[in-house]
Image 1 (tube, rainbow, N blue to C red):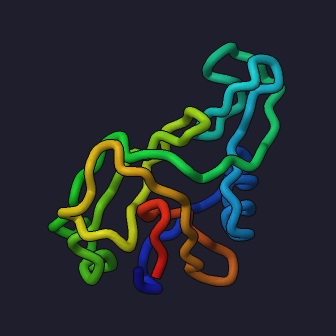
Image 2 (image 1 turned 180 degrees about the vertical axis):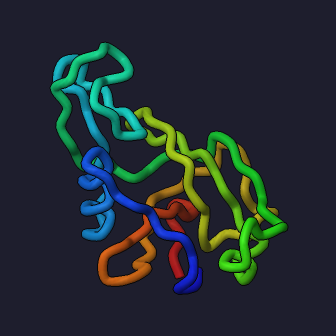
Length: 138
């Protein structure tokens, strides 16, 4: 990604997620009543409605639930990246995350492929959690 790539704008609900990512950790909100993790961050548990939520580290392991290959960049800032894979990853802890897959050719991606979180530092304040094939690294 280039310096012109759009970056997230954290808000009070998402700030813990982005702070953890900048420290190369994947943290998600968990309900203190039903103990289920969820994503995206919100003010009440989507499972039971409880408002007593806290942030906890998760394994960062999961599998590809769904994916698409982007061949046509949505903006000029993404043009150097095409083709790239946008995937929904089902984490072992339950929640599904929409993310990008890295270090894998689009033709090698399959539903059920085991993946693990990786992190890409974008600037002094922003680090993006991305996913790569589990057990592989550069």
